[in-house]
Picture 1 (cartoon, rainbow, N blue to C red):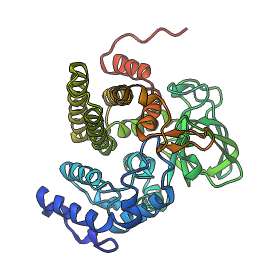
Picture 2: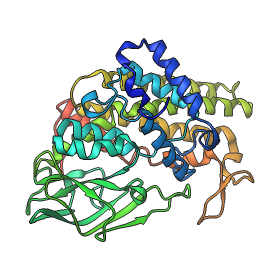
Picture 3: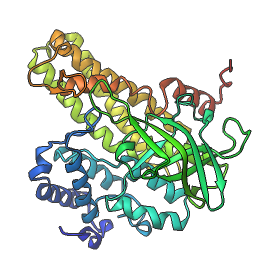
Length: 405
C-alpha cells in the first residue's frame, strides 16, 4: 500500500474481519528492517530508544494514511469506526511495531482542535500531525501548579499581533524533540483559579524558549523543564476564547482519558503477558499468592479496557467521569511494576550484565526495572490520584468541596 493509498479505501465498506486483514497485511509488509529490529521498543521509561527510527516510522504511517485514523474525514482523517480503531491498536501491538512519538499531537491536540479550534487552525496544524512531520508537547504543569492547574502563574500578555509569554513549566514530556507546544497561561492580570486562563499554541524553536532535560532514574530525559522568557506566538493562535482556557484544557484532558487510552490498554495486555511469562520462568506460577496477584491484574485490566471502550462510545467531549480511567490505570500500572520486581526476588533489585546502561548513572537496567521505576510516576503525572478523587467526588458525585487551607 503506497502513499496515502488508504485514502482510496472506504473503511465503512469493510467488515471488521476485512479491516483486520488489511491492517495485518500492511503491518507485515512494513514492520521490517530497522522498524522490526526495535521490537516495539520506545514505551514508558524507554522513550529514547531508537528515537530517530521511530520518527522515520511516523512518516511511513502518515504517508499511508494510518495517522488520525478515527478523525472525521472532513478533517483529513479516515472516519474509522470504534471497532476499527480497536482492531488497529490490537494488531499494531501484536506486530511489535515501534512505539509512537506524537501521542500529544495525534490523540490530544488534534481532537481538541477539531472540537474547539477554528477552521484556520485545523487547516494549519492537522496536516503536519497527520503526515508525521510536526510533534507537540503539553505545557500545563508548573513548579507550584502540578496537578492543580488552577494555580498556573505563567503569564501571556498581548503585544500587538502576538502574545508574549513568561513563566516556567515542568514535566514537559518530549519538549526537547517537539516543534510546537500547547500552553495554558494566565492572560488576565489579577485573575485567580480557573478564571483568566487561555489555551495557546506556541512554537518551540525560538530564542525565548529554553528546555532543560530532567534525567530520570531510568536514565532517559523524557521529562523537561521549559522556560518561557518573552517567547512569542501569533495573536490568533488561541484555541477557544481568551480567558476560556480552563474549559479547553479540561476538554483536552478528557480526550486523553478517553479514546487515546486505547493503544495504551493493548500495551498493558502485552506487559501483563510478559509478567505471567516472568512468573513462569522463575517457577512462581504455583505460588497461590502470586496466582492471586496475577488474576487480580488480569481482572482489573479487563475492567480498564471495558471502561475505555465505554468512554470511546460516548458522543461529544468526555466529562469529568473520565477521571475514573486515569485513577484506575495509574494505580494498576504501578502495581504491575511492583509485581514484576517481586517475581524476580533479589534478582530484580540488582544490576545485571545484559541490562542497558544509564548514561549518567552508569549502571545497567533490565526492561522490567525500567518499567518499575517509570510506573512510580503513573499515579502523579497527568493529575495525581488525589486530584482525580477530588474531581470524581466534587464534579461527578456532587460531594462538598475539599476544605482549602
